[in-house]
Each structure stands twice: as C-alpha cells, then as structure tokens.
Amino acid sequence: MVANHGLLKGMNPVTTLISMAIITLFVLSGVFFTEQTAALFTAVSGWILSYLKWYYIGIVAIFLFFCIWLAFSRYGNLRLGDDDSRPEYSNFSWFAMLFSAGMGIGLVFWSIAEPIYHFQSNPFITEGLTAEAAQVAMRLTFFHWGLHPWAIYVVVGLSLAYFSYRKKLPLTIRSALYPLIGKKMYGPIGHAVDVLAVFGTVFGVATSLGLGVTQMNTGLNTMFGMEVSLSNQIILIAVISAIATLSVVSGVGKGVKILSEVNMWLTIGILVFLLCFGPTRYLLGSVLQSTGDYLGNVLSLSTWTDANENSQWQSWWTAFYWGWWMSWAPFVGMFIARISKGRTIREFIVGVLLVPTMLGFIWLTLFGGTAIYLELFHQVANEAGELVSAVGQAGIVDAVKADVTSALYVTLDKLDAGFIGTIAAFMATLLIATYFITSSDSGTLVVTTILSMGDEHPPTAHRVAWGLGEGAVAAILLLVGGLKGLQTAAITAALPFSLVMIVMMWGLMRSLRDEKLTPAVYAPAKLVTNE
Image 1 (cartoon, rainbow, N blue to C red):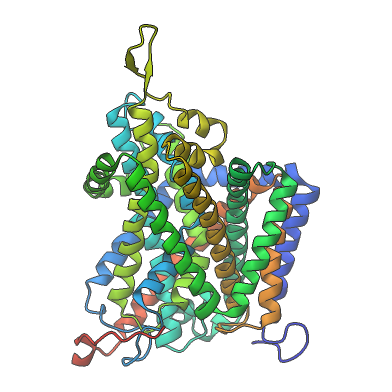
Image 2 (image 1 turned 120 degrees about the vertical axis):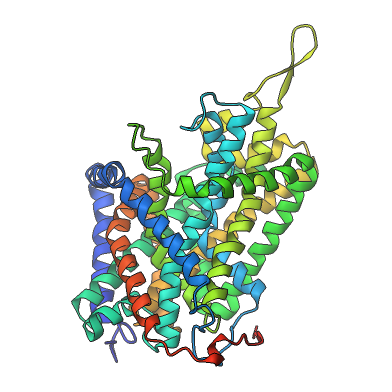
C-alpha cells in the first residue's frame, strides 16, 4: 500500500497524489477564479446550513449521547491497546496537547467576540445589552465551545485509537470502516475517505493559520507599531510555518509535546492576569453561574432547531459551528488517537469531554466575562459631572463591530493594568503564535500519518513538504482574499464526512460487541505513564 522507492517512498501513492492534485486545483482556482470559487462554495455551504441544519443539530446531539452512554457502559475499562498497555504521556502533557490541537487559535480569536455578539442580540432575549442578555450570551458561547465539539472529536479519535492500537489496523481514517467492509477498506472506498480527511485537515489548519496571523498582526501593531498588511501577514505565516515544520520533524514526544506544554503555561499565566486585574468577584461568580446555566439548558439547546422561525441566526452560529467542528474532526480526532494509546475507553471519553471543556469554560468566562462586565457596568460623566450608566459604550462592542481581531487587545487595554497589561498583551500574542505552531505541526503530523497508511513516524521529507505546504495554502488564500471561501469549503466537506462518522460509530459498536470481556478487563489497573 506504500511506495518502496522514489519521491513517494513510505507514502500511499494513490491518496498522496490525489490529495495533492485536489489541494493544488483548489488553490489555483482560488488564485485565478477567486470570485467564482468563493461564490460556488458560499452557495453550497449556504444551502447546507439552510436546509440541513436540522441534520447537523441532530447528528451532533447523537454523537454526544453516544459518548456519554459508552463512557458508562461495560466497555469502559477496555484499553486502547493490549490489556497491559499504559499511556505514553502524563495527564498534564495529554491535556495540554488535547487543548492545543482541539481549540487553540479559534478560542483565542472568538473568546471575546462571540459573547459580545450574543450580548447585543440573540433569539432567546427581547433586548440586548442587559444583565439577562449577558447571561444568555455566555450560555450560548459555552454551548458552541463545550461538550458537543469534543463529542465530535471523541467519536473519530476513539474509533481510530481502538482499531489501530487494539485491533492492530493502520492509524488511518479508513481503518474504522473495517468491521463493515473488511479488506475493501484498502480499495477505492478507503482512498476516498482518507483523501476527504486530508482535504478537511489541510484547509481547516490553513483557515486557522489565516485567522491567527491576522490577530497576531493586530497585536504586533498594538505593541510595536507593526503595520497591518498582507505582506507582513505572509511573512508571519512563513516564519511560524518554518518553526512548526521543525517542531513536527522533531516528533510528538519532543517538539509537539513541549510546545503544547508551553501553551498551557501561557494560558494559565494570562488567565491569572485576568483574574487578578479584571473584575475578580464577578468572574468567579460567573464561572460557577454560567457553568450551571449551561448544564441546565444543554439538553434543550442540543435539540433546538428553530423550527418555528425563519431566522438565520442558527445557520450563522450553531449549524456553522457544528459543520466547522466536523470538518476538523479528521485532524483533531487523528491527533487525539495518536497521543492516547494505552488509556481506557472511559478514561479517554471522560478526559477528552470534560477537561478541555472545563478549561475552555474558564477561558471564555475570564475573557468574554471581562469584556461583558466592562460594557455592562460602564459609566460616563454627564454634563453635571455625575456618573451615569453607559451600557455598551466601553469601546469593546465597537471594536468587535469594526475589527474582530482588535477586541482582545482593546479589552486588555481597558483593564488599565499599566506595564503588567503590556506584558499580558505580549503573552496573548505569544500564545496566539504557539497555538499557531501547534495547530500547524499537529495538522502536518495527521496528514502525513494518513498518507503513509498509519506510520506514526512518517518520512521526514514529506513532513517538511506538507508543513510548508499548509503555510503556502494559507498565504495564497489570504493573499487573494480566499479565507471566506476556505471556511465555506470546510463546512461543505463536513457533510460527507458526517456520514463517515456515522459509519465509524456503527463500526465501533459492532467491534465492541465482539470483545470477550473477562473479569480482568473490569479490574482497574494502576496508571503508569512515561514522559
């Protein structure tokens, strides 16, 4: 299945050449037929989000319920590997890599912008810029970044880890189809599934690179006066992609793990800053309140399709997010599987579902909650010199409307923390850079693993080529204004891959039923980890 010599040595020639051809054609169409390409994908994704949003809502809800059931089922103590296998990474390293790969840049980019958008208007309130609107804004933001995205990743990651490490099949998307189609997975059907996964991974990562570099450019402009321009953004992409390529060449156990741990410490540092210099009492109360509010409404939100209204809100937000997460599922799921060998099914599901979700909630509350507090309790002096309420006039709402990338830095500036605030802004920019790198190196590792038929140490030359290639795709599409088209393409790719996920879930259940569960399987074993 892999070439033994030539430029494609160590890689599957069919999937590699087809993937390269499709990606090249997409990029060329974006360069030479920008408007037509964007219009095509906008039309297709618009149709999906308008007419199939009920399907996206329903299938993601099923994924979450499936994960919860499986975690507490009799299969929970089965290990992702031999019965005596143990995790390769410590819990801290594992959680750090989970969070960095699964959310990363997107969470930094939207942590203030999304709550502020919902704070102004959403279908569940009659008036924006109120205390009620603030609560609902955090509820909806939690919903879009909480259990549901991670349930999507669990379905893919768990299936791949199970079939690869327990059933000894290649670490590729196609392996999850084995219980249903057997050795036919090595034929055209398997090729198509792997190519689809590579497509979603490359363009999902490229989109993150595009989002991240625009925010980095804004941060460097705020701190050092670096001009916000396409040329500077392309230079940043080149530098970051080079660093990411070096990271992925060094391997998961070195570069990827170290950078993910750096991410985690930077995350902790900036969260501590917000807790100390922000509205501390409000934030602590908001974490608890918003989490409880989310848990109290998660069931109804999971199945809400806005069937009685003709609003576009759910298409713009929930359905878009679900499609976005599913387009990322091959990338994140594969990476999670790669770092989870030796863990039990229950440990995998609980860890992937709960830990990143809770850290995400804390992040969203401290960033989004701080921004909302500043807008909700903002006061100005009237003509008589008296302080009066001026809700929505702190400047963050205006910043989000004008330029989403500036919202983070405007919020940090409003805290009036002086030099420490400057340090926090620098840390935030550095955090974007490290998330940038970890998204890129994780994506490169996933693509080359798929194309090498599950080789956990794919050829170095191909890791370098695909690492630089992802940066080139992001740069070209940013240059021609193709990021919007890129995003809509990823959403479009989510539809066929959602069908693959259904098959993966079905195949996993069929295989689990064939497991011979012995008393030893149920007995919990002492956790031993290797760094």
